[in-house]
Image (cartoon, rainbow, N blue to C red; front, top):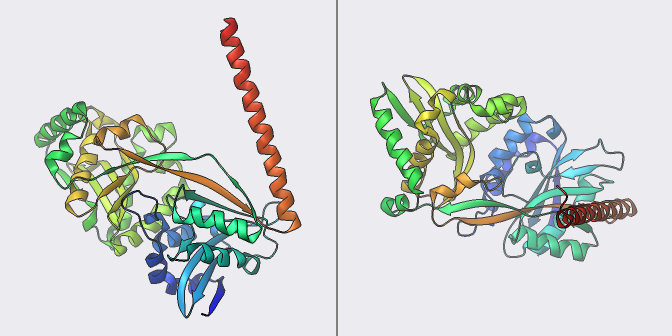
Length: 384
């Protein structure tokens, strides 16, 4: 059995990996512990095109008997005084992703990929990635770190919400919160009274129209509460660059999904995401302020849910942090968790940096513990 590692450092050399890359990015539709659409080659390409920090990249490829069995993409940050810092591209923007590993043998394969880091970036100090708790990649990481003599720090787990998409529309409708159902029905009646209200299914978008689609989304964001709060795409040029790079790729690959609501030709609300292997990831959504009274956000999301279920999707992944409004579309909500991992090189410098960060974390935890103790004492003594 012949195994070898290949280091790619030119963007033009990445393109032939597309088919193998996407085949290794395996979703887990049941528990969402697999690789979502942000692990796709198309997402990687958009990051390379849009983000300045992606100027220097590498892709480590593991081969076995002329077959690709593992892929580890990297961005290199040389700004740290401690030495080169490596990150997975999805650390800049992403969801459920990690090293791409064939099964069986994922633990051995990740060990081989980590061994290739010295060739990809001599003198590297640390590697940052975010992994789904209990995923194949996280289990492989624990094994590879222990056997390879590396050190690691694993951060606090953060949960995200997802729910099953019901093929039975009546059963799905019954799982939506009662007040949300009422608002959706009210919106449907009011939109029926509007002139030329039109809900466009983004699955039928054309790649050549992607700029016009993004312009419609930006128009909505610019006139939304999110823009005033500073969280809209229009507040962040790097996000605009990313979505302009992503949309045509997502359309060509068949992943783009969601809806855009037009009233009298004017874009007023949208929901944008990616559908892959039966799982929809909810990337962005918003609506214009002067349509707030119609509760169109609920309407557009629910119509997207119906469309996704009809087209064979089985899960709706909200991504991000859990918020109360996300719980209102299903009675069968579930969660998964993601944790930040930092792996340190087994060199003397890597081990020293690991010890330094471990000490800093302990000090921070002690300070937090002391602060909580002070708050508890104040409450017990009656201090406000």
